[in-house]
Image (cartoon, rainbow, N blue to C red):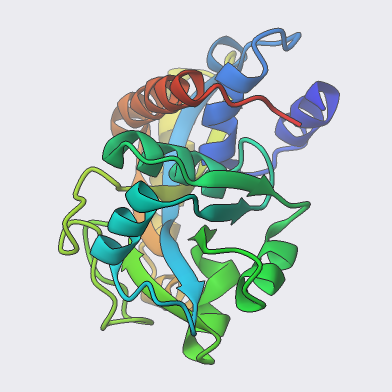
Length: 243
């Protein structure tokens, strides 16, 4: 897994929340994410959506919390250490519950079993579940964001639903080799932030469930450090291991 992780970064693919978590999940990687790369710009984020089957007796986030404390619920994800798994683990820690994690090989299979009633809940990547919510096959309990999303304006945020600490966005960002000069990083970041501010691009991102949140290195760098530390705590507390 580690060579594939390194290949993805060296190929210039987007950096996401998963890469921040991988710092802890792969402590013996033969390169350093924080030393071999440097932050350029944060691009956008997609909030996690908490979903249950449409026929579920769980009607809102307070119901989910109560049920999770009263009995054993099964929560699916797209795999060990993925954002849905991390969000589930954070939920368990915050409310002192024990939703049992069921890992799948990707988000689509977990959605299929959730719709079929084999799972109780998924803390889902927004793009994976939104069509099923709009189609009436799943019920969205809350959005793990500080603001509501225009695609599901009636779905409350976790803060509105009573759990303000559960804020998780699967963000996307750009990084560069550590040897790139400050001048080049700043020039690249300025161009990226400008492009991301295009109204057309913002609208396209919004229709796919993303919120443009363009920030240069001066703001992205501390954000990245906080995310690495945050998910390290969650991973260690829950004892999460990578596949």
